[in-house]
Image (cartoon, rainbow, N blue to C red; front, top):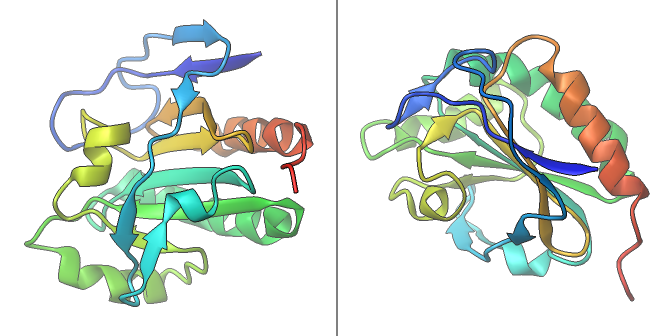
Length: 179
């Protein structure tokens, strides 16, 4: 069963653990909808287009910022999951929600934390407005190979990575992308 899991956090740029204000599944059943396309610059100044990957890979969008401690705590497992599963068709994309006051710190942060998956900059909140209007972080959006949003998870507590890994494994087992 695919589910949309939203755990309630305060509005605004909220950064917190998954258990804070947990409200349980908000929507369950079929896929939530088609993932909206976006184009953004990555930390190396290159253009990243989600549409270049939709329908080809399972995509995990991870919304985070340099000042979010739970975001930092989840990076080691995201890196490991990406390394283990990129050959199976997983693409992890970090979406930095750092604003104008801290966006310049993102490239050094990416290097310091050894992040080897693409990281795009959302300093104007354009991508967040599509996927994360409450600007909660960390927030994970799993997009199935068919381009539909399969699961959304808000917040992070130690152990949550097992849930995300199970979601990713299920999505990777799904139908292969048409060629």
